[in-house]
Length: 293
Image (cartoon, rainbow, N blue to C red; front, side):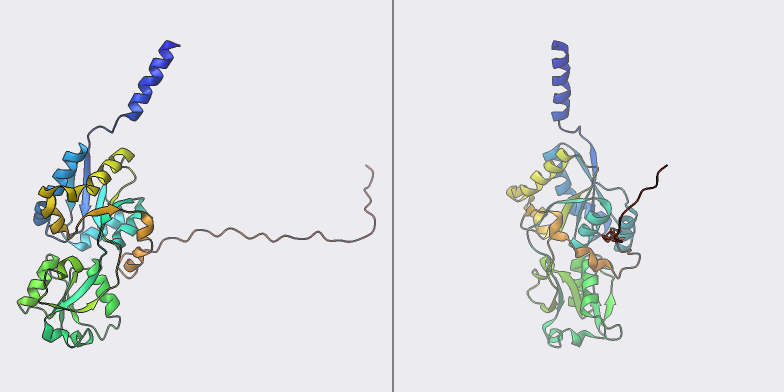
């Protein structure tokens, strides 16, 4: 009996132990060239590694086309930091769970010099507008703004990052730039021609293969990130004041923004249950007679 109790206690202690140190991959949108992304996210990766005891490595795609291809194919990644449309896609298709999000909502603004902005969004038809490539949220929201294919600006997807678009306005290489609100607010000398609708802020989500205790450790670390003064620059670079808890319901429906993107396939509809109508027994009247064997 004593042996059984000892073995049971040993098994329980193993179950209660945290997962052994492991390597985890964090995928981020290609808002920077890969080499620059490594520099931007290194302090965050170091912080997560120190806080959780695990090692975190960055997965930075060269561009949005590669990112979208990898996302559709379910390329190996453990965590992802993305806008709402990609987050919802991972929830629906790949079994990811949003853990925390940027406290601020996401909104994109079409920014231009004051003289150009006077004409409004229609005044930019036929003129140059720069954005990150499809299927970045900025590019897709431009499509929402200019639905008529013969009444659109010349959309240039040549920026290496969101700030590049604004710099191209200043250098007169373009008349306007589509940028997220955390970039737009850094340039008060430009005017917003049009603001998009709001989306839930960018989320850090975890894949289904990540152990629950690792998910919790990452979530706890991200919720405390703003308390570490040495990581202030990390939050500034990410355009966030802090991270807050979130869940999949906050992103439900955001995937719809991807519907017009090449390679997108709608979710298969669940089979509807067959409706069986109740059939009343036929009443024939008279006496029922059973034949003898």
